Amino acid sequence: MTWRATVLTLFPEMFPGPLGQSLAGRALAAGRWTLAARNIRDYATDRHRSVDDSPFGGGAGMVMRPDIVDAAVAAVVDERPLIYLSPRGRPFTQASARSLSAGPGVVLLCGRYEGVDQRVVDAREMEEISIGDYVLSGGELAAMVVLDACVRLIPGVMGAAESALEDSFSSNLLEYPQYTRPAEWRGRQVPEVLLSGNHAAIAAWRQAEAERITKARRPDLWAAHTRGAEPSVARRSAGP
Ligand code: ADE
Image 1 (cartoon, rainbow, N blue to C red):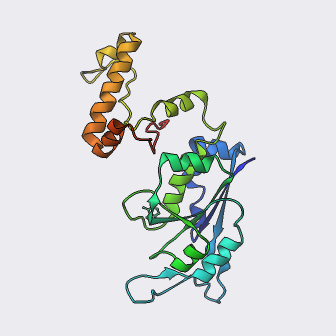
Image 2: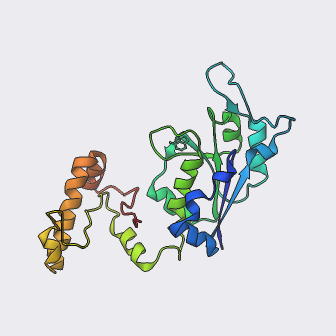
Image 3: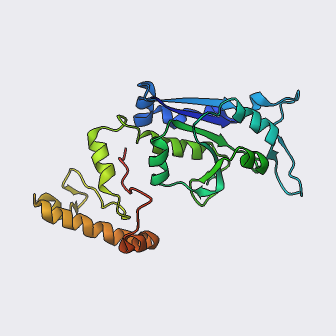
């Protein structure tokens, strides 16, 4: 079964955007997943095609109308999870990506302005997901982040080399640093041990580096690591 993504947005021309390139783009072209971006404005009913209105209770900005959003949702919903991208959502993690990528696909609702009327979020029992503690000007970039993280995990999308890397970091540690040729660059040497051919020594050095960097940069992750907590994240990305 092909993994299917549908995005509801006021800016469908933003898609596929970066998802049309590189790993995700090749997988899209190969038919390993599909992407449909639907314009929420197509479901507007008045002659101005308006999709938003001012917030009850006052305040700045506009709110997306529940009736219009609901009509857009109704046109696409099926068995796939329905997700509303919002800075108020639960944090998106590698575990979320893994779970979504194992299913039939996803329907992603992107808000603009001050967001979507809460009643349609509740009525449709949408899952609210945030990609981090910062506010984007709309859900589209967040939707792309979610899709990129999911698509690379679809079986057959990553090659063997990338999959191996993915699996190597699932213990609440940040990745160790990487080096390639030349062995000396601008007077900087690649760490000696990496040239030694001593696989045990290399593994020990990498582990120590991963621990040092995690302690320094992510005390929260370090605490989870030392606690032996279930990782919510596999920390290694395949890279460019
Ligand atoms: N929309 C605006 N900011 C967002 C965020 N941080 N995560 C998900 N959707 C968003």
